[in-house]
Amino acid sequence: MSIKIFFSLVLLFTVLITDTGHAQNIFTIHYPPDKIIKEYGLLGVSFSVKEGTADKVIIKVNNEPFKKLDEIKNINDFSINLEPGTNTIEFLALKDDALVESVSRFVFLRSDLIGAYKQWPPDYRKDNFHSRKQELCAECHTMDPAEADRKPVIIASQSSDHSLEKHNEKQSTCYSCHKGILSYAYVHGPASVWSCLSCHDEKSSPRYRIEKPETVICFKCHLDKQKLWMNKKHKHGPVTLGKCTICHSPHSARYPFNLYKRTWDLCVNCHYELGSGRHVLGDSLSQRGHPTKDKEDPIRIGRELTCASCHDPHASDFPHMFAYEVDNLFDLCQKCHQKKMDQ
Image (cartoon, rainbow, N blue to C red; front, side):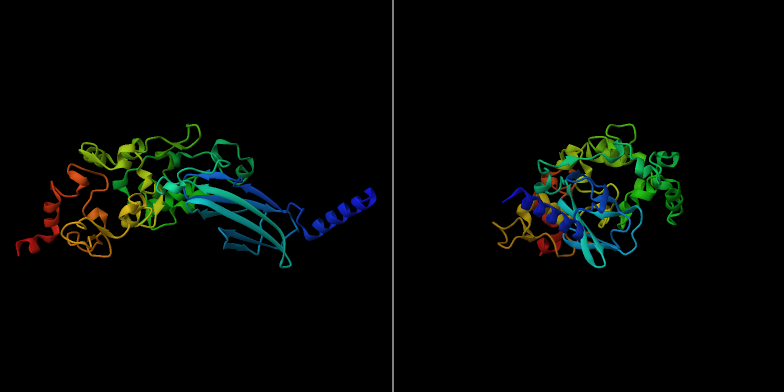
């Protein structure tokens, strides 16, 4: 092949790419960077589109449609709830309904709850957003906390009309970017009044780091739990390690007690060998075993039977983390089955 033909082909290839728009750098992704690690499930996303290059943007998350923008702003931002493991965020720019550019970002949500996602892939890195100067964000957002974010939380003083929460939303500098963290039904007390610095340390490195173990922070408010649990003979693994957020969301959650999942589903994440829904007695009184779900709790009226019906999920003075003052399985059974025992 002659040099003249070679350069002609290169020129033709370049023109074709430019005509289809794939080399125009239409997107500027302000956040997130590619291949980062997150500890909590809410991700802020921000991007811009070069003026005149696209009239529509479609966002896909993990190959599913998430958002369509028919009106593109100078800076576009929103939040995404991540799933444990690797998440793919795909940005698609369209002009006259034709795809002109696509860009992807990969974000890994680490989880202490699910063993497969405790360790991240080797080419991913942690990204501490607030530890860097964010000049673009600072054009619209206040990047330093206000006095309202430093206020102490007195949970007992909070009223049921949510007036305090609404007032603090207006005062908090964290609210405008992070309001999505309270999108679930059950909200943690400090988060509900935007007292972010009750838990996050603005002077730490990286900035806003949570002190470890987490019980150092949690027991500042939950003094009764510290006194109750830490003096028990037997403690659940997460309590021993001081990792409250293995099970509880520090912001908001879909389930009571700020649990990430329903109680039974949460337990079998670690105790996967008990995932059949049957437990104990299988080699003795009953070959089928005792049900651990899909039944009413005979003692806690109106509540579902779960692992926590028999076992304390935090600490206990009794064998096998029994939730009642019993020393053996037979005595535990009588708590629910006393009438049958008497017959």
